[in-house]
Image (cartoon, rainbow, N blue to C red; front, side, top):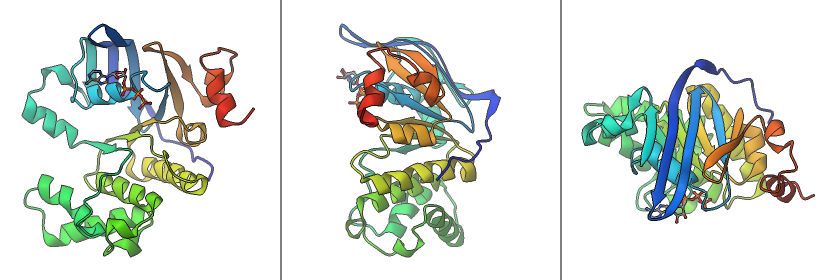
Length: 257
Ligand SMILES: Nc1ncnc2c1ncn2[C@@H]1O[C@H](COP(=O)(O)OP(=O)(O)OP(=O)(O)O)[C@@H](O)[C@H]1O
């Protein structure tokens, strides 16, 4: 499906990173990251394995601390937050990890109820049911409500994982390799879902991927991590309009040149 026009507010950055550095022992992974994610935007982050994409996501979510630089998420300087404040901020961020990590012993319904019951004190039974039905409808899987995760396909599990994240109405979505391990048709469905989530929930998202079809179909902007910095950034066409030997193979490999 063609990506619809995104409603992006370029005057409002929900993530603002300046001069971010992070090393492990002598290995400098992030060497001066500057990045903004705008309200309503889908930003795709590309980079070779081991370039620090996951480290970046962990720093944004407060799971790792930067060595240097400033990281502001939803207006909060994360280095100034205590554990309770960090936890409150994390609830406003949805994480879609590679192995959707559903609870195998719980039905789809129970999996979706879990974050609500845990994070929304005082929520009523009726509100829980309405929320569960609404996110299941959003990901196109209403019929699976009473199924167990083991009865779902990989693509369906991925969708339920995304639904479980959406149920808390996150302002920011972080997708870590959303199409990894899925067949091409399911990949297209997941790409469409990422775009539908952007439109329907007005989320701002970072999408980490090696899949350039995913990058092209979901990204309003692409940022490429090279040697610890975002050295190429722009639209898909702008980023790949180069003979740079660090960049060109990504394109050639994905589009079989
Ligand atoms: N907690 C840690 N302690 C030590 N080194 C780490 C830690 N976390 C990450 N690293 C190192 O930082 C580098 C970047 O790792 P990261 O997982 O961010 O890569 P990535 O770009 O996400 O890779 P991939 O595409 O393979 O998922 C790697 O060399 C990794 O070994």
